[in-house]
Length: 261
Ligand code: CAA
Image 1 (cartoon, protein in one colour):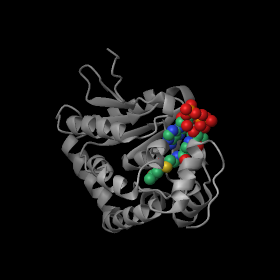
Image 2 (cartoon, rainbow, N blue to C red):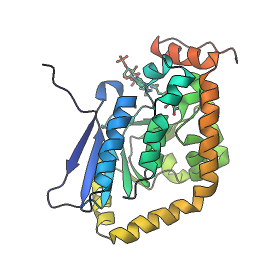
Image 3 (tube, rainbow, N blue to C red):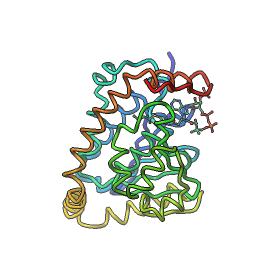
Image 4 (cartoon, rainbow, N blue to C red):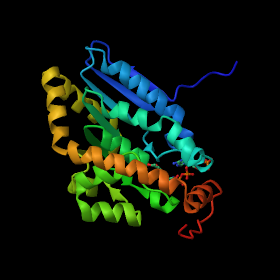
């Protein structure tokens, strides 16, 4: 019988207060398909209700944190399939976790990958990390909080540049722009993120949960409205011919021909 490979790997430190959840789809640069997102949300929910876990690190591989939502999966999905796929529920589950989340980012952190990192409470980035929201190149737009969280993090001008032109940011640029909290040496991306997580875990756990809620409150009001709006326009974009063309073109490894319809 073929061995079932988990799409997320959960590690607990013996005696430790932190857990690490690693995305494990290396042949697809950790592209976030429905199955992976389901496993991720389940693993995180379980850790969130464990009182011994005080901080969770979410990481990928050295080459890629995650290169976005799974384009092959989206290329064959209708707007209604997308709506029914409970995709939004999984993102909401991650967003509503009380435990502090540290994103450990090395390599590509694009599209839904960048949105996942921004859903975490802070980002520790390897100097190799590359951030971007390339969705408009596929005829769609960021649909898991990117238009809202990126704008809050880096301001309107830079967010527009990244989202409309597909500009990518290096780790240093992301640090200067306020998207990431710390940049660390290439080989230390996971160890340093875990060190930060241990620091967080050494503080009052209730205080940390409340502080996380309060900091999020600083953005929440407009964010909820913005997320709702973003979802609606994503489904609209998804129903377009341009989305079919952009997504298929990636899968077929050719440049897209957009008609604006
Ligand atoms: N979905 C599905 N498969 C992906 C993928 C994705 N997002 N990103 C990479 N892959 C696959 C590639 O197709 C390739 O598969 P094969 O080996 O079968 O050809 C494999 O992963 C390795 O990737 P590359 O050969 O392309 O690696 P590279 O080093 O040449 O390029 C890259 C890396 C620049 C990240 C390139 O893979 C890329 O551009 N990926 C897509 C990035 C992107 O557009 N992300 C946004 C997705 S849409 C989104 O996220 C939607 C949303 O919020 C609603």
